[in-house]
Image 1 (cartoon, rainbow, N blue to C red):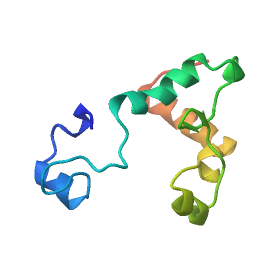
Image 2 (cartoon, rainbow, N blue to C red; image 1 turned 180 degrees about the horizontal axis):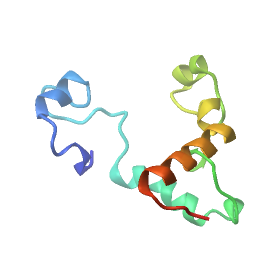
Image 3 (cartoon, rainbow, N blue to C red; image 1 turned 90 degrees about the vertical axis):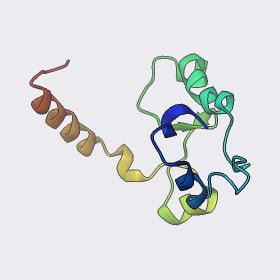
Length: 103
């Protein structure tokens, strides 16, 4: 686990199933290196050269899935997360909130 959890009560880790009673991290969690691998892959992958807007996981572009499929494979991205109209509205609202316009 990383320092992102530093302000959480360690007992919450047990309740959430992140660690067992001995404090051992759940084996399904990635190591710090494994967790950083996808970001490094995205930054250097030739197949992503000049492209953007993808959700990535486990060193590949995420597959668009349904909620049911996402639960089954524990991965993927839902269609609404890649909706261009919603993204444009969010961008506009963000610009309004910070009082800046970005090209």
